[in-house]
Image (cartoon, rainbow, N blue to C red; front, side):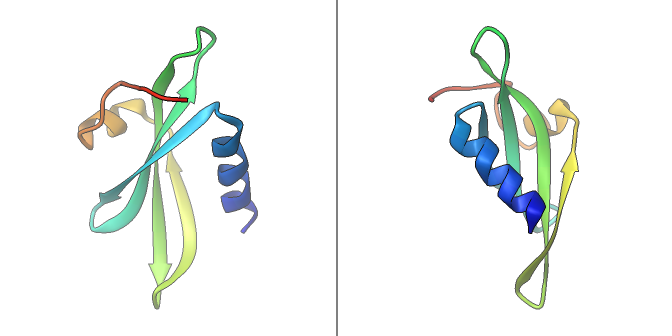
Amino acid sequence: WARIELIEAAARSGNVRLLPTRANGQPAMAGYRRDASGVLRADCLWVLTLVDGRFSRATKFENPSLVTAAGFPETATGS
């Protein structure tokens, strides 16, 4: 659970934005991180593993190209 709590804290800070998606049939999140100029740039793809309908694991793929391959833009808008 510690990893999920860290993800939530980062998202609340405004420096990270997570957008829901799916990867290989599993729930996932496209991750954006705010750069030094204040722009939210594609950063990573989180894939969530569920076992018996319950959260089991979060795996982070630190490859911005996976975000755009999932159909999301290179930059995100909003706060």
